[in-house]
Image (cartoon, rainbow, N blue to C red; front, side, top):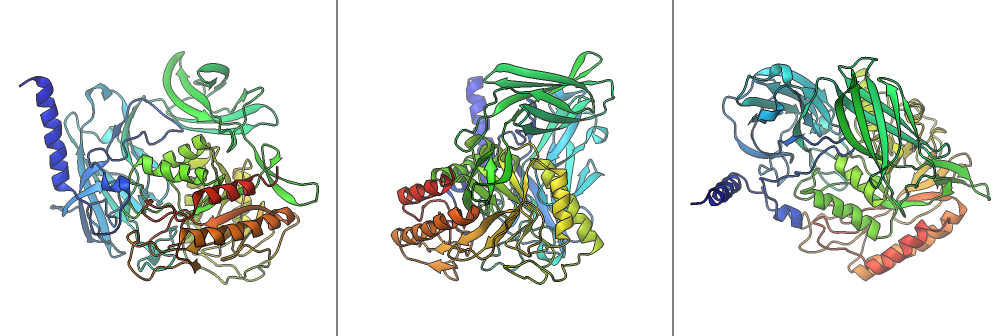
Length: 603
């Protein structure tokens, strides 16, 4: 037998072995990407495109797992295999099991480092783990992280065995709605607008070799009014004598570059810049170099865009959202980011991109990412496709008195010191994570009144920490005179309730037109929508009726609007698409036409 044939036979046998160890759990509907999932090639794309290096190893795949009472030791025997990075409650994990607040979820696998990584510092990266994570390498606890929505990493170099395999163990605790932590729509008893818990690893796990002196973060802020890009570069194990260099490229051609001592901010001049917008989402390539004693110590690839988001009064005195100093009506769907087979985790990168492209094809120019934070590649796709993003903070803790439609004068929720500190830490991590993505144009610290507390203080901190973006204080929540937007919710039809002469007024949620579609339902009964119809024509008629009403309101006051929602989610059947993404529930040509008219109404 030829070597090539032996190699192919070996690969085939390994694939068959993986399939024998894994199959989707349960009998819920699935997407086409979930149905064709290969457990040997799960979300294999580079996971951090805003700061890319060539060399890395993906640790997604089958791991050992066990669910044990909280507070115990690492199990001597594990229960079976789980497909990382799908949450244990999901079908694609191959387990489909609840964990609960009395238990902890354990993971284990072995890793072997490539021979050419010898002499390098090895970083272990987690895209996101929900919620309280402890990591052990070769029976040594090397670190922990609290927070279900942001990436974190550890330098595992000091804890590696000399040669051979390394034992990696991860322990996760997630009380879901039994504690104060940010959790979005997750509850232990899903119904209506509340969904299945997500516990454990739900984004890519990966390894990366770096030099001892290396770049850890790149943060860029465009300034189109002054024709420059401001850049801050963070690094590890460096000195003030080391040098940072930033280069900007347009289709491979060097546009400009700048150097600074390590720790100093950089400004790179970009004259006659190509501005980023939904109509023309142009991205410049970036190269960031770290020099030490005249030698290249590290290099990462990135990208940037020249765009500006702001507010300004129009000729009629109405405060408007502006993109690149021009009035721009922000219009898009409420996007929950849930999947019937993967829950929080899209079954593939192609699936994630499909939702974004379909949103753009529907005629929208914006997405409100609702009480969830996506993997880094989702934001990269929005950057590339040209979609504005309003980014919510995932809700958590409790809800105080809710005083709709007027300025709140009551007593806000008082969180515990631990809950307060945790919210601030997780919110800062989210802002840091997405700081350089041009698609993100608005931060939303609170949704409605869920967990809303110290609103002016949180909003003012957010605005000061990132003055380059708008801050929407509480979408549909208790309103205070702070931030850049006043955001009203009203179902099902759009309406004007109050407006703010000092801030841009937006309709943060409306719609919710429902239609259950047989054979595309998460559950056969108890399906819910604000209003329900029986055919695509009926749904589209109602949608267009609302859209025409909205047009009149835009001329008077509104600068943005959010339609509920992109897809059905579990028991909610008010999506533009079914939960499995196999059917668009409206007449697409009519939907696209009226949406584009709305997006262009202020031009």
